[in-house]
Image (cartoon, rainbow, N blue to C red; front, side, top):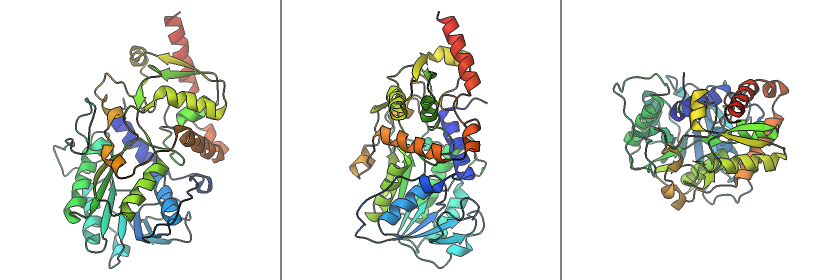
Length: 374
């Protein structure tokens, strides 16, 4: 099945959440910030896979008191000193009843009925509900400049609960609405773009630092000036906690500023950080189509700027920037990703990555490209 960006982000994101982390001890950036003057009681729905641990680490560095609500299946022993409530968002919220927190951060909501249940139960028991959504909620990605007021996708059948590449975005939009209904004026919706960095087991960004660190000729898409957008998981965590500390409500797109990052910058920085001898062979979109090299899955982070998803690298994040969303250098994200990858088991490193090209497919495609182009 051909995977476009919207489909791939969904499946990669769910895969990362389901699989969990590999080495929590080395997965986080070292936050060194002053403690917040406002100590909060924070409930995190989720908290033990990818974004969750980054949130926990940053919030703890600011002195906040944390409670995690999980099924107890993914990295259940990651934070033994934190209060861990065990249950299931789909039908078992007993552990959340008759409890009060200042803020709830919902990192694990995909189905509006399920999100609505937690939002309703916690209404009157939290002062702010922060829901982590996605830029995939937008209805039309063919044009650049999508902002928080742009139309969101809708489902013909809003009762469906099957999360697929086609329903993921519209379901997330309905989840946003479910939260806003129960926490009117007291909710914050964060719409991340492609989340990258340590502990992302989807390999949707990790492929490039790892592959380029191996050196040799690397097949790369289209050209170095093609723009893209990503957000480091730790930058996203910092912004979410900032929204909690300052009671910032509303809806915010959260990814890197449009037109500030190119594929070539990612590739060259991967080479510099890793110290490899990699060379880059940029192949045309026509060749990619001929060889069925798909954007976002076979060639992660890249999107064809002449296709129906061309608006993806131009999401408007001005609103979040005004509220303090910040970004670390791409070199830091790449270095942290490589450090984490090198800490995982050799067995994991030896397995094929979940996105990107296998060595065999890359070699075959490069040979075909050179034969075609002399």
